[in-house]
Image 1 (tube, rainbow, N blue to C red):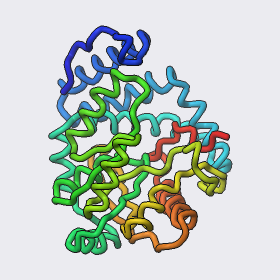
Image 2 (cartoon, rainbow, N blue to C red):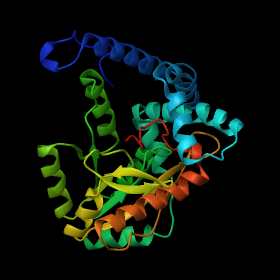
Image 3 (tube, rainbow, N blue to C red):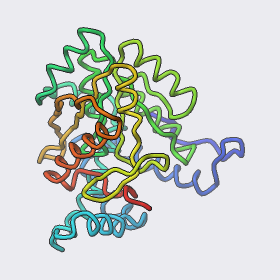
Image 4 (cartoon, rainbow, N blue to C red):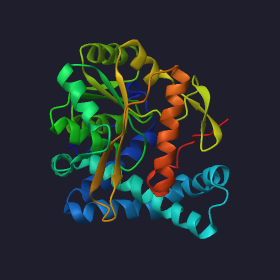
Length: 298
């Protein structure tokens, strides 16, 4: 766990005083929550995120706007429920990631299900690289924890947070779940490609807006989407496998699903198949996807 008191702001860290104060509040909240038993900690963080953080961050409007664009026929009562349930899942995910060994132990017990398990295990036996594409759905790090615990050589790509003080302990938290992790950027990408070329596996979340991406469909709307996962799969003869952790009704456990590999094709075709795969799952469990993102931003 991180230090209870962060350093005073320093100009060379590239952050602002407001970011430092924000991180101070975040550390205090996380530190307090970690004093609670796991079964209370997770739902309580979901409640805090849903009832306090979400309104302050303007998430209700963003969730409603995204739903109006993509699911216009959703009843108003269901949209109201989504405004509460989506941030609740986000909050649960955050504190689960910070719960370290308790979260890892739970994920370790989860069986692997789905029609892609055999292909995944065969790739490991053959030393063939694999790219596991998931989404900001359920708790994506439950997949990573479950696979690493079973000996899969799974690394992860992450994006540096804008708040440098928050980024410091966030990276430490995700690193506790498993190694290696690679930061987006020249150095991190070089390390990631070496890991992949050596027969490793890589977890990636391609469901956020990428300014340099191409326009593909997601929920019937054009969304800028990175082709990098498909391009790497083709270049390094890696399997591209969708995999997800579906939060269960108790709010604490997950079902790990490994879908069949995406068929080779053009990068656009393969990436659209990933979008379609995730969309089918989100339509079944709409409150588990992070509708707080600006996925369809012009």
